[in-house]
Image 1 (tube, rainbow, N blue to C red):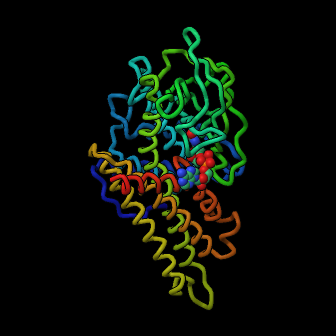
Image 2 (spheres, rainbow, N blue to C red):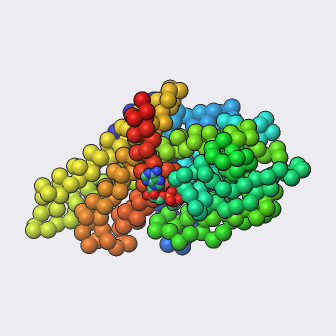
Image 3 (cartoon, rainbow, N blue to C red):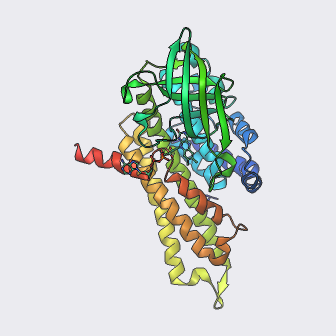
Length: 382
Ligand SMILES: Cc1cc2nc3c(=O)[nH]c(=O)nc-3n(C[C@H](O)[C@H](O)[C@H](O)COP(=O)(O)OP(=O)(O)OC[C@H]3O[C@@H](n4cnc5c(N)ncnc54)[C@H](O)[C@@H]3O)c2cc1C
């Protein structure tokens, strides 16, 4: 899947990396996805395999244990993974996001964890959302108070990907007054006393990586696990999300590309009125629009990624890419179901799963309304 795309990559190494990803995805992901999705089991071993193959720290410097790849290459790896198994691609994207706070603001002692984080030995989680608010993250209420050597954390985080599976958790909590300036970032280990992951949510899709709440019942995190400055947590959370949104956009492009490829192949085979349905202009034009949406989404994504790679401001372009690519994925996967007719509505074909999975991409890492807010603010505030 995704093989129909003619890609221009920045190096020979990048072509090799994408070949390796296709080979790994064909071998490790394609054969497992249906079974794991049906059972709702998290594929921890698959992520270990990806880690050992160097795919869990791609955009971080080699000196820290990463692969030193440009963001545009990392995103195309994600795209290929998403075309085979969205939950795995999203897990790679969330893990990459979860490594950012320690990479960008970690103390020397915290940064010693980076090789294991970026090598995939340690899986990460990013805990920002809460039951009473996801979009308005600056008003989060989980509180951390100092008690001698420790921070004592009380509150509930919601929708946390890798809850109960991760080895380290970035916990954004209130250590000061109201608003963004009162928020800090703590790095909690999986065995933190009083940190209690709950049962996974019963989700519409991504069942092999369903998020869960985490209750912090006086959880004790050692004082040396404050990441960056006290009160600096919200800035870290937003910086991480800027780049993370590109990851979600890449997942959307991969999912949509898989849907186009599958629908086109089906339309070439399926006959009605004595001809392949692809020969009917009504269907051919539908496929043409689907393919165009995917190409446009990929172009927007890569142009935002190249700004990031060049060290230029990219957050508004990342918001546009996330908005467009995830809306395109929803439209394209809906149309793919239509191309298959009744067969699109049953589980014998993957388009049914892709249609359910596309929805979540319009919600996570800032809903598409929040992306519009980011874009419109850049226009109205000058
Ligand atoms: C599968 C999954 C995985 C997730 N993983 C994580 C994770 O790992 N870590 C994490 O921290 N969070 C995670 N989330 C949470 C996700 O980021 C939030 O669901 C999202 O930010 C929206 O928050 P909410 O659900 O509280 O909706 P709300 O914020 O209550 O929004 C409800 C509706 O109101 C709209 N809205 C809100 N404010 C505005 C506004 N100002 N203008 C216009 N419309 C507005 C929203 O767009 C939405 O349509 C995950 C969610 C899901 C479903």
